[in-house]
Image 1: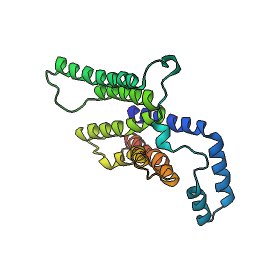
Image 2: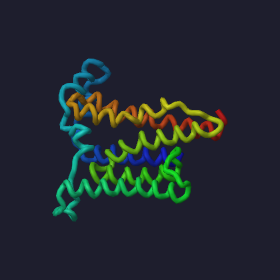
Image 3: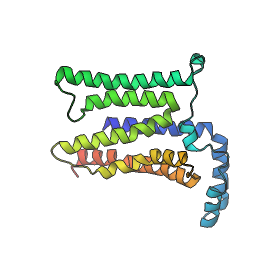
Image 4: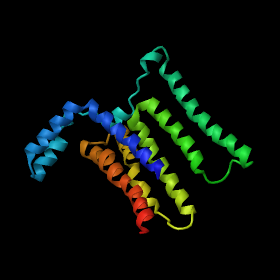
Length: 212
């Protein structure tokens, strides 16, 4: 389960980065929500009226800035460098399989998952920051852990556990399509990955300690 907690940590770090960059806007939104009280129609009007200065999460997650120390590197060259990092990790896993298993086929191991997760986090983080890194890591790590656990004797967790952590990726897709709204972003980037993402590691911890 450490892999799940690590992926959640990276994602929460990304949310914290977004919140830090929008401290004033979030304060304004919170004040308006408090002023609206418990009246559903007023709360909905606050959420759908405008963005209150909040950058769309998709724009923030996909934002690209070449690090100042590499300011002379063109964006295309930077993407090639990042792609090479990810490609190198995949090649490393493939070569390792050829050396130890004499084949590149077969289920992914947890060791290989760690190598690829680190490469994905670095590639996505260097491209768009921790929010994009967490968005990529969550479904990858959750999917591999569920698949690996189901191959072992005992507990067979459902793949439904993976669906909530696809929320941020779905939110980015909606943003790219121009269909994202503030309420949708709150659900896709907040409620689904946090509430839904916590359920699997907590369920596994309860099962391990209490056998349920």
